[in-house]
Each structure stands twice: as structure tokens, then as C-alpha cells.
Length: 209
Image 1 (cartoon, rainbow, N blue to C red):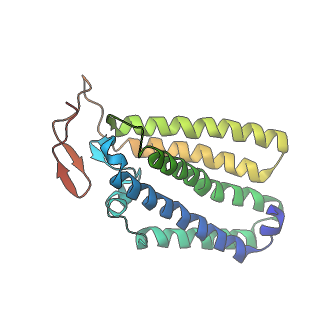
Image 2 (cartoon, rainbow, N blue to C red):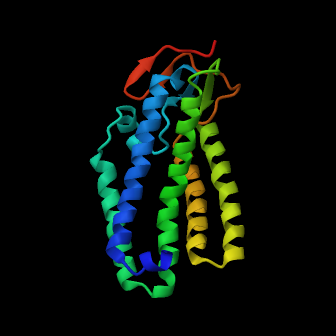
């Protein structure tokens, strides 16, 4: 199947754009569910958001299904994949598809897992968690790194360049979290929740007391 897709550049480019849009769509669905129900039990600080990329935090909070700042890079990536398949050697095309598609698939499965968890939390969940963004990033790095180790082992056993590409995508996803984390203020000592928590687009006086 991958070999067939690697020989059809425009179909592969279209799938790339679709995967990018699914990633965004799941992000918006997750945010909608969080605002409707899960916000009673979960809040991040110093900024209350589920979106790791600061560039998109306000847009995700507004739940915009179509966001040009996301669609344009998705289109550019689709063009890169299309041109890559047209010009790179045939043997390396599955590696390219595995890497690019792996970036989107790994993040999308994370969004889907969170979304299902949020929906399950509509009943039978009590209390509230305040999570510092740096802690959230480190937790996500751990998930991506563990998944990458599994994919590396799978790639070694299968000798599949496609799986190798996905494994590299997993490592890249973990590294991206570390880069984003550098922009987040350090956790104060002692680790005390601020008296007010900044929510993207608005202010709130919720505290952990």
C-alpha cells in the first residue's frame, strides 16, 4: 500500500493535507469538549490552553474550524510531499511519507485519546487539577519518547523505511515539545498556584485554594 502511495505523488500530497486538517479538527473538538465539561476539572497555568504552539493558542480557544495560519502551512507541506515524491529516489519515498505522516498521526492519536478521555470524564470525575505548562510539556515528551522507542524497535524488526520515518517523526515531536517549553516561565519555588490564572482571551480569578 505504501509503495503504491509513494508512486502517486498527488494522492500522497492530498492525504498529507487531509492529515493536517484532521489534526486541527481534533484539536478544536478537544477544546470544545474541554470548555463544555472538562474545564471544571482541569486548568493549565500560567496560560490555560490545550494547544502547545503559542501561535495557535488564541485561535484554538476561539474554536475556529478553518484557520488560514494553519491551512497555509498544511498546503505547503502537501506541496513538499508531492514534489518530494516526484524528485527523490524511489527507495526513499516511504521514508519521507513515514516522517511527514507520522508527525500528524502521532499528534492526532494523542488528540483523539484526550478527546475520548474528556468525554469519559463527563461523569464519575471529581475535583480539579491545576497543571503547570512546563509539567504538561514534559509529560507529553515522555509519551512521545516512549512511543518512539516502540516504533524504533518495530522498524528494526520490520526493516520498513516507512516505520523508520514514523519513528523519526516521534522523536521530532518530542523535541518540538522541548523547544516550545523553553518559552514557558519556570515553575516558581515553592510551586504555588498563582492567585489568578491567565486564560487565552480572558481573565479568571480561579485559584487552587
